Amino acid sequence: MRNFNKIAVIGAGTMGHGIAQVFASFGYTTVVLARKESSLKKAEEMVGANLKVMLANDFITNEQAENTVKFLSYSTDYTTLKDADLIIEAVPEDKKAKADCIATIEANCSDTAVIASTTSAMNVFKVAKMKHPERMVIAHFNNPPHIVPLVELIAGPDTPEDLMADMKELLTGIGKQVAVLNKYVPGFIVNRLTAALLRECSYLVDKGYCTAEDVDTAFKANQGLKASFEGPLELLDYIGWDVASNVGRLLYPFLCSRITPSPMAKRMVKAGRLGIKSGKGLKDYSGKTREELQAVRTEKVIKILNTIRKFD
Image 1 (cartoon, rainbow, N blue to C red):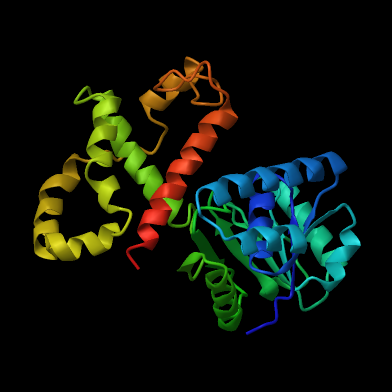
Image 2 (tube, helix red, strand yellow):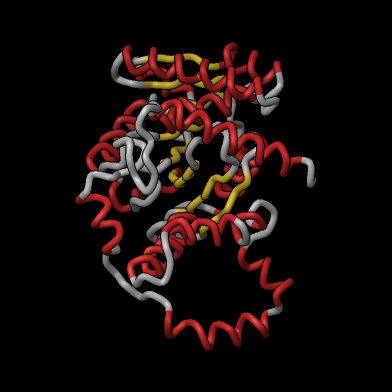
């Protein structure tokens, strides 16, 4: 396995600071890089707040919290990339921003450094113009990255198998569960599954078959309950593949096949009901800040993960 002694994360936002925090907590020398000192200060504040919540819920050990403070630094000096073994790009989901960031990385890093993009949808292998494309992977951390265990690891057309194996071993070593894609496909795994599910959910509501609340109730009280320990394909081992095949033959012709955003989504956007960011979505969130709502949700995720850990 390659030696990943120093990790650099470019981007101090929601994803960047959380990814850096995880590596540092496992004892890796890690630096967060950003153009503005104000962004780095905010990132440091967010890491501090994360540690308090995680310690309060027994999600990390005192040693991991101490490691985070000890091994994590913040800088605007991109020349620090020269001795980084792994550089993770975590800038906004914009083609120019991604391309410019990767170009900056290659201009400052060593020829042996590995570069990973956190893009959640973009084919950065086409966007980036690289001198050494064989060093590039996509490592899609899921939000919030310091809590959610999943990382989707995607190979580029020039990515060698041994690099994918080394990255998987590295990520597994910091407590992540890795889903590997051998080539880029739009949406990877998670977003494709989410899009397919949401298309059918909104279709049921748009057709007047049920309310949005009933859709969420049906999911949470069945699939959502079992999803903590059982994937949808694994589930079929218990249902029976013959039963699933027969049900599919009867049901698939009646499922939504729309290739445009749902009428439900359009109505919500037109009404300004964007969710917690606007104070209203399907529910009314007025009276509470976005940060407060996110904190409550994060604690719920931590409690579920702590419970799942007991299954092992």
